[in-house]
Structure formats: structure tokens, C-alpha cells
Length: 377
Image (cartoon, rainbow, N blue to C red; front, side, top):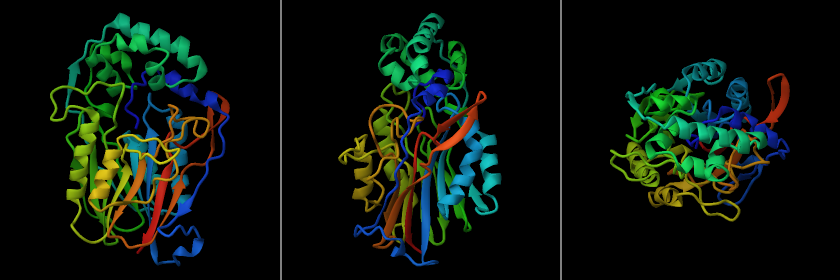
């Protein structure tokens, strides 16, 4: 969930102003509530994980500082297979791939491309007024641009045209390009999804959803006899108008259409796994809902969600890189036909130290925490 209107890099880099972060918690559960370590014996299980790395410059803070920390952290999880999202940059992907090569020698990523640039013609005066508001009301206190345009600078943002808002969301790393000609798709048209495995990946292919603004899609592959769809579904972008000229009419409608694409890409029997950032959160006590119909749609098709109890989108102080005030679970490992036993844990949630502008800062690996499910081999 990163394609929000975050057009001020410094606003996001100063998220670390909320550095009273508490230590993140982890839990493990299974279908019978058992959280014991002996649920599986060595060699009888496989661990499938998801992690949204949040590597979007201009969208999530401290990307350059976090990139070298991600591969070592993945290795420590003990995951056998990991689906990564928001690894947008080619160089970032290659760095992570090279670092994981010894323990995760098998990888798949489809490099999708930008369709073309278009005129957006943001009003330069209105854009400059928004920048001034963000700089004065949000940057000094470390408020993210997404939250800023919903609250402190709502009037200035609302004065922009719909096309300008969409352009800003697609060009977080170069918002001033929206005055003239800018990219129509985020991050040069990349889809941001990558799959890494300790075991051979077979029958791998990328399925494009045909979505707006982001080349959303799923990697369909088979690993150790298990059919896997590694994906990142569309965000329900409340601050970004849905672009015209597409089959769907809203971000939520686009997201829910992707359920069938993912499910139909998998076989009708055997162990099937849909894993990734679903941008869908259940209504579960302290967990706040967001397009819960999407998770319900997977459930209706036989997919069980083992990963909806503990937040993966945990606003400050739990995660200084996350924005907003609502605790959600966007990241899921959904299972169908994979046996009656599963053990869930939240991963990639530990505090890390980085050096930025000569200062040592405590932050997290991403604005998301990861999830992992252990199932029978």
C-alpha cells in the first residue's frame, strides 16, 4: 500500500520523528490454537512468507538505508519461500537477489515496462501552494504526505484536478514532472513483485491484472509440488481519483476483480497458496477493516486465512514508517487444500538502526511487517 499521494520526500524521511517506537510483537498460532514449537518436526514442513519491502522512493522513508538490511533479515526468518512486494527498482532487486543467492538460489521476477508518458498539466501555482502547506504544516512534525493531504492540507490538495492527483500518485519520486509530461504508471511500469525460494521454481509466469496506474499482477509458480500465486492486489486509494478509461470504476472494484484472476491461475486441487499484500484487512477487534469483501471472496473460494490476528500495518509508534492511525492486516498467506495444520508468525518486524545524514536512527525494515505460515511438506 504505497502508491498514495506522497509527493514530498522530506515529509516522509522525517517520519523518524516518531522514534518512540515500541518493540513489535510476534505470535504463532495453528488451527487448534497450539503455538508450541513442536507442531512440526524437522523436515516435515515448509515455510511460506510474504513481505512488502516498501522500497518506493518518495513514498516510504529511508529506502537506500533499508535495502542492504532486507536480505539478511529474510535469511533469519527461516522462510523456505518468500514473496516480496514493492521491490520496484531494478538495482534494488539485483542487490537483494545477489545477497540471497546462496540460501535462496531460485528467483523469479517479471520486468514490466511503462506504457508511455502523457500530459497531465498540474497547475504549477496550485502545486506550489500544496508544497508550501506540506512543508510548513506536516514536514516539521513528521506527518506523511498521505495523512497530510487528508487533514492539514486537505483544502490545498482538493484544489488540484483529478488528473493532477493521479499524476502525483504515479510520480512520487518526481512530483514536479506533473506540471508537464509525466509517467502514467508508477516506478517506470514495474510491478514490484518477486519470488525467492530455497527450492526449484517451476512453471513460473507473470499474470498481469490490467490495473490502472500500477502494473499489478501475480507470479504463478510451483514449488515443492505446491501451487503458489505471489501477488500485490490493488490499493483502495481514498485520496486518489480512479482514472477514467478503464474497465472498472473504483479502486475497490478493481481489487475485488483480481480475486478471480488469482484463483483461476491456480489448479482446482492440491495445495494452493495465495500470498502477498492483499490490501484487504478484516474487521477483527483492534484490527480495522479495509475492503474486507476481498478476503471474504477468497474464503468463499475455499482459501483459509491464517494471518489475520496481528497487525502488519501498525501505525506509529509501533512502526514509525507507517502512516495513518488505524491498525490493519494487509499481508496474508491464504491456504487451500494444504492440510489441517498451519503455524503462523509475524516476521520482519524488529527495530533496526540506520545512519541518515550522519545520524543513527531507529526505524523498521519497511512500513509493513511480514507474515509466515508453516505447513506440512
